[in-house]
Image 1 (tube, one colour):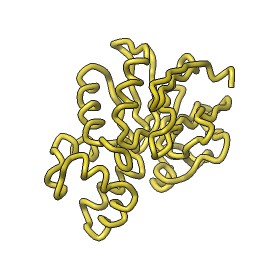
Image 2 (cartoon, one colour; image 1 turned 180 degrees about the vertical axis):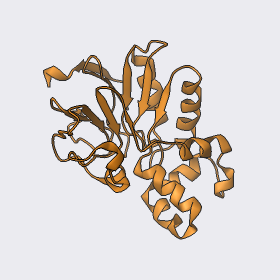
Image 3 (tube, rainbow, N blue to C red; image 1 turned 60 degrees about the vertical axis):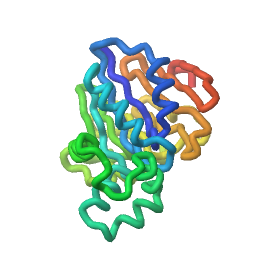
Length: 221
């Protein structure tokens, strides 16, 4: 039984489909989506449909990214709508062929609303953006969990491995050290690599927009 984390998707359904075909998923494995599954890319609606499909076959943990947070904020207060649209929300509405929020399916809204700010296991902490390494997870600020950029190793007081996204790695490879890894490797253009990590094996699996595939151990980086 393994736990897989998948980095920021930003509406790039073709990458997700290809990655899931490449990953050696077992029926009892858990999938953690690190947030920012929507916005900027061409098919956020298809990404959501795939997530619903995955939830029928695997345990799926859906974390809230800053883009899901912006969407929810815009729905609750329309004054925030222009900011979300400017940050890529327009592409999400287009993918639904939506004229208003009412055109987004209720099951997708339920998924957005139920998204978690973090997920913690016995040995790993999953979070969209970053955290305060000196605070227990129950004391973390929502702002840090959603918006704080990754700027180097995260040594959390728990000693657990921290897996995050949000900060795109220009190299196309996940940033990795003994205590943390940032796996946001897909540029907003979609011309690059989408990453999944197997937390038990400390290995990563990647696909790109040209159909290329690669996987390796973090120990080789």
